[in-house]
Every structure is written in structure tokens, then in C-alpha cells.
Length: 395
Image (cartoon, rainbow, N blue to C red):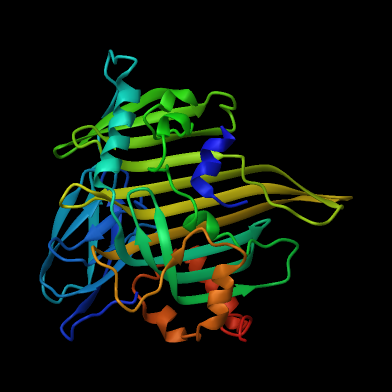
């Protein structure tokens, strides 16, 4: 099973706004519970304007008003909201999607749907060029010790990020036993599958022979307008408790909409005989959105890595590195003035890029893509007050 994911790895806003644009702040809530809906897609139909709500369901969007917003999230029904001229705030309440299990489902239904989703990716996969905002926070015993934020120019596809070029970046740290200076590689370098070679021999979950390495279970079927969404759970045959996840597929178009994976094959190396890292687990979540012509592009990606630091004669310490990346502004052609590099390039590539970029504090203060939860806001302000950004990596 390890070979399946090493195949995927290959490793060990700026926004132009017119003079008449307004800044809109909003929140997306569950209509039934009133709870925030994180990572909902918010867009203006017929334009490239769009964003994603943060972990508290909050979002900001700059554009011309009046306008319409389309707000969607895979566990809820999409809704269209009309905005009036002069409006500065909006609350959107989405109805939860009803999930049901059919009484009888043929055993081959789930695997055949996965095969069709793989074939759909093969037929429609193409590069999309835009930008991505990346934020990483590392915590030891819940104490933030490392913050990295970047904006990349990206070449993305229906399976993940393929190439990047740095545009803006900043990094800050404080003295700590452990940091993850190459953690962005898990975002840039991991894809949900490989579309090259013979997928029947690669032991990938999303492939033409998914049962070679996994067992499957139908988790539920829900409806979103004209879409029938099927969620399929999977477990590794040889290590089911340590490698598992789920896929969400549109049963009408066979488009992959979400891929979740929990794995324990990624571990951190530490060169200290008095320390040992145990109980590692990494959770990935890729969310995709369909385009008007039937292709699939990456919407956002979350990575959450946790483990335990065992110390000689000292209490254990929890270790957590979390990253969220949202993609936006996608178009079919690459900009002429951007030089892309392989997204799988490691060895501190992003930190070196940050070191070479001039620090622009106004960019981070005024950019509507840089949305933060209250906890993230407090963390980043603490680093800003210490003057950590823009000085630590100054050449």
C-alpha cells in the first residue's frame, strides 16, 4: 500500500479591482443548526471572482454591486443570493443535503463508479493557471512556534497542484524543539492519483483497478439540485486502521468532487537520540469543482499532520502542523511573465523563495484572500508584534 502513495508523492491575490468595486464581508451558516460552514465556495456567476469561507464560515470578496453570489458546499445545497448596491455584509444560510443509503446496492457499484471517475479525469484533465494562498501553522503542545504564508502562481489540474512560482511570502518562527520548514511540500507535491502509466498496476485507490489495494463501502448518497453525490469509503487491505479515507463523486457526470485520505506513512526525522516521534498521522482533503465545460479543477486542499514527541525524563509533547491552501483566478492560458517550477521541489524551496522576495506588509493587511479565523488572527498578530515577519529571512 505504501507504493500507492509514494507514486503520488515523488518525494522522501493579487486581485485587480475597478474603481467602482466594493468590499463585501459575509458568513456562511448551516440553516438547520446555525453553525458556521467552513470552506464553502463563494463566487459571482459569469466572472472569475470567487473565494472560500474560512474555518469560521467567514469570507471577504471585492467586486461590483449589485450582483449575485452562488454559494455552495458539498454537504449542503447550493444557493444564489442577490446583493444590492451599497451592501457591505451578507449572511448566507445553506440547507443541509439529505443523505440516504439505498436498501440494496450491487457490490460492484462503488468500484465501477470509481473507475468511471478515473476515466473522466483522464479524458478531461488539463492545466488551469491561477494563484493559490497557502497558510501553515505549527504548534507544539498547542503553542504556535511557526507560521508560513505564501501566494503562488499555480498550474493545477484535476488531480492537484502540478507547478508553482512564488509571488508573495512570509515566514516567522520562535525557538522550539521541532519545526516543519518543508511542510508546504505536502501541499505542492501530493496528488490524488497518477494519470500516466498503467493504473491497473499502480495500486492506487482512484484507478481502473481500485480493488487491488482497497476495500470499499458506500457511505451515503445525497442530492444537490440536479447532482446525485455518492460518498464511498475505502480502507487499505493490508493496513486498514492506518490508511483509509473517502471519495465523493457526482454519479451523473462522474466528476471527482472530494478526496479524503488519512495515512501514517509520512514520518518526521529528528537527529537527537533523546527524542523520538511516535503515533504520526497525516490527513489530506482535496476539494475539486467542475468547470462549465465538464472538466475538474482543484478548489482547495487541507493537510493536517499530528504526532507525539517522546522526550527522555520529560512529559510527552503533542506536535501538529496544519496547512490550508485555496486556489483562485483560474484561466486556461499561462501568463507570459511567470516561470513555473515543479511543485514537487523540496529542500527548503519555499523558504528560499521567501528569503528572495521583498516583504510587503500592506499586501498581507489589505488582501481579501487572506482570511483568518479568530485563533489564526491572534497567532499572527503575536508574531507581527515581535517583528518576526520580514526580518527573520532578510538576506
